[in-house]
Amino acid sequence: KKLGLVMTTVFAGAALVTLSGCSSSDSASKDIITMKGDTIRVSDLYKEAKQFPSQPTNTLLQNLTFDKIFAKDFGKEVTDKDVSKKVKSIKDQYGSQFSSALQQQGLTEASFTPYMRTQMLEQAAIDHEIKETQYTDANLKKAWESYHPDVTAYVVSETSKDAATKALDAAKKDDAGKASFEKTNAESKVTFNSTSTSVPTEVQTAAFKLKNGEFSDVIESTSSSTGATSYYIVEMVKTSEKGTDMNKYKKELQNVIKTEKEQDTTFVSGVIAKYLKKNNVTVKESAFASLFSQFTQTSSSSSSK
Image (cartoon, rainbow, N blue to C red; front, top):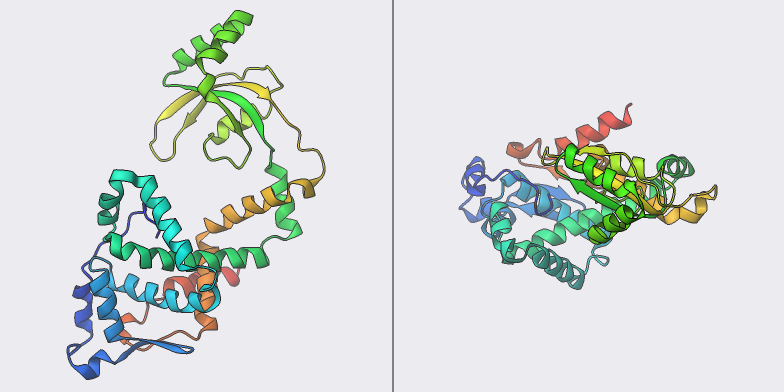
């Protein structure tokens, strides 16, 4: 649900016809969702639809609910200052493309701030659950098995295997060739570890086997997002050994676990289901009876395994 992901765009008003007679004052105060200490009424949904006119009704109701239940526990952690800082960071990242990126997701600059607040509250809940339940010895040991600390190397990519092979042969020919390779590819000298996302997994695997000054063979890697294949050469500058003390890298290992769990849709659904149950969230309007089933069903199926 973060900016940059594809979201289904449905005119919110279209689904509101399921709530008959919503224009009357009685219907406007009709409960759609109840929860501990709060209620979402038809009037709340219409107000949300005006602010986010291109969002699906189900998304509007989910976000209204999440904003309320997560704010109870994490409202003090996600301050207005934090939200403003995050919005500015994303705006700076997109630059001149920011408005068009918002438009693609049915958002405006005005609506993006409350939208981001909801996302940050949800993220706070997920991160809290990870911290409380996932940094176990078993999970840390599992992360430790594949973890490799920082190394520094020249990581050079070519568009063809032939070009990469020629560049590698020239670099390995003699000291002059090696020096020329390093000078030409000075900007390709990077420091990375096994958690880095900027260096392909295949390249990391080959690099971690190298000693200082050694070159890899030509490494083939295909991007999962673009489908393009690149051919890499790695020259190791400064390698490292992780040793046997896992506790030395505890923070890094926790980050490995955190990243993995944030991308685990079953885990995330389970967290949301937990807070829905904790707050006794109940859908009163039959038109939206299955509003939260994607979370509760996923949670139930995972817990029964």
